[in-house]
Image 1 (tube, rainbow, N blue to C red):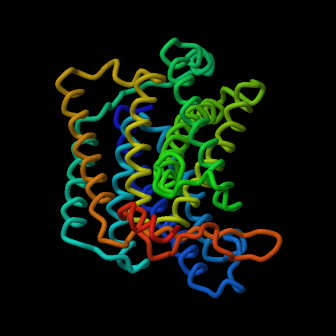
Image 2 (cartoon, rainbow, N blue to C red):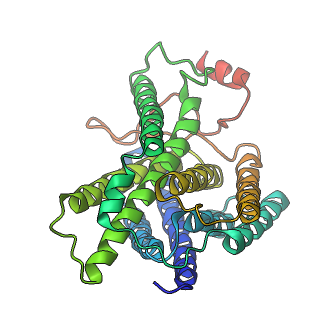
Length: 353
């Protein structure tokens, strides 16, 4: 790999971010259009052509991202997801007709500036190819094992608790407490973007491993006879589909201007952490460069959080719907679609009582 191949990776990562945003926006548009229909006409999203169009673009963006990871380190590709955040502010206004405020514009400028700094001061390894034996041994590193234990525990808890709350909502269980963050629907406003970010970051780590094995194969060193290649491929597909599921769960329930920035913040931070722990991408970076890069990431994330917390009243509405065998389109929870997930608890109390 040439010394400046990381530049190719940067451009591919930017293209992937633009495509990701467009695909996600079209999926949100599909959910929004479906929820505006009478209950008798509503269908599950896998039967909506708008959703499939968005999914196709989103899927293509993942292949572009895989190519980017073959040229650039994971911790450099991840902050470029900020491009998708900037695009999200535009597409949310132009396509989804969500309100765009001066706060949104300020946050977009912060994110774009942080993204540029990340590119300038991020790790630019001159020539660092990973052999299959290296990729296999990295999974046994103490730091990686500890990270996987924490990652697995947090993910299991969020998945289990989300499923429990979803079932309680469907059955109208008395154990559902609308005013409780841990035992009520509001928990889903945190678990969906957290799970999407957790799984997406891990998916990128697996994709980087897959890209390295693919590159070795294309260079004439076939890895198709190694079981590890197929384990990584299968794991990449499963984790990627799981992250897509929770992205769609969040997009169905909340505005894109809330869900997307929250999800991307988790994704960017964890991806950088995983790149440091697994690929040791900061081994050749100077202390000053590392400090500026870290500040750039925090600067970028502050802009992302500014976008997600600066929502106008009523923008992130809970619009849960369920599709069951009896009758499609019945409300999943007795929560009106004009109740903001961040509204005061008294408003929810009044409704449930």
